[in-house]
Image 1 (cartoon, rainbow, N blue to C red):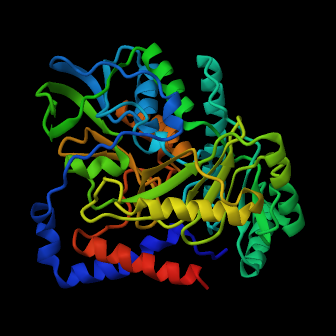
Image 2: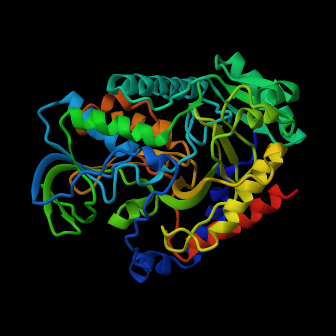
Length: 472
C-alpha cells in the first residue's frame, strides 16, 4: 500500500539535506561546534499534565548506582521498572530534568497504535516479521492495562480499536487492497466503506477507513502516574528537577548534574528521545519536530448527539501532515497534528507563531464536525516528536565501553513502543539480548540526518513539498 503521510516527509529532507552535506562535508562535520545546542526545558501545560503525579525532590548529593536512567517519560520509567523487576538487587536511579511526563510522554495525542511508524498501514514484504511486531505491540497494550490495574490507577486505557480514515477517493482503492492482503496474511485489519465509517465517527467527510481492532487510546498523564507508582514501589530512586548536563564515557560512567552533583554508574540509559542530542549523543539519529494539540471542555449530551461519534474510536487521517482525534472518558474532544515545525539547530522552544497552528486545529475540528464550528479549546499545547529519517525506531547500546543504552526514533508511535523498548533495554543491560535478535531495530541507528544548516534546509523543503501535495 502506497500512501503519503507525515511518516514520509523526512525522506525528502534526506535528498536535500544529505545531498547538500555531501557537497560541503567539512561544514557538516564541524557544524556541532559552530552551532552548539542549548538546554531548554519548557514546562508541560497540556491537559494531561493535570493528572501527573507530584514532583519528587531533586538529587541533593553525589550518588552511586548500577543503572542510571536519564529521562522520566514512558521509556525511562519502564526501563527502570523492568530492570528492578528482573534483578531487585540492582541499584537503579532515575534522573528527570523537570518532572516525570514533562516531555512527549505527557503531551501526546493519546492514541495507542500497533506496529512501528514505518509499518503502520504500510505493506511489508516480510509478512512473518511484520506479524511478530504487530503481535508484540498489541500484546504490550494489554500489558499496560494489567500494570494500571495492579497499581490501582485508572489510566483510561481503551483497546477497542483505532481507525485510519481515507481523505480522498484516490486512497480508497489502495486501502481496500491493503486490507485484503492483510486479512489474507492473518492480520485483523478491516476496510470500512464510507457509510460504515460515517456511522462510527458521525462525519461523512471521509471516503472510507482502515480499522485496527487492537489499537486504542488512553490518558497519557495517568499512565505516567501508573509507571511512576510501579517504579518507585519496585525500589527505584527517582529524582526530579535534576538535569544532567555532562556524561563522561568511562568506567564507571560519570554524570554531572546542573547543581554540581556527580553520579558514578555502571550503565546509563539515554531515555531522552528528542532531547538526546543535548547530551552530545545521537545527534544524527532524530530530528525534534513540533506537533500541536488542542482539547475542548467536556461536551454536553446535546453536542455529543449532534456530532454522532457513537463508536468513540480514535482516528487519524491519511494526509502528509496527519490530523488525529480522540474522545476522552469525560467527553472532551482532542485534535492534534496538522502542520508541524522544526526549529534551527534542534530548537526546543515553542515557535513564536504557534497560534497559527492552534487555529488550524480549530478550523479542522469544525470541518470534521460542523456542529462544533467555532468551539474554543479549553487547553492547547505543543510537544516534540523524535522523527527519524526512515521512520524507524532504534534500541541498543553504544559508547566506548558498550554501557550507554538508548531508545529513540519512535516518530509518533512512542506511547506503545516506548514501554516495549523499556523491556528490551532491561534485557540488554542484563545480558539477555538473544531474546531480541529477531527485531530489526536492535543495535542499529536510523538513517543519517545531516547537521545544520543542511538539516534545517532539508526539512523546510520537505514540508513545502508535502504541503503543496496536501493542498491538491
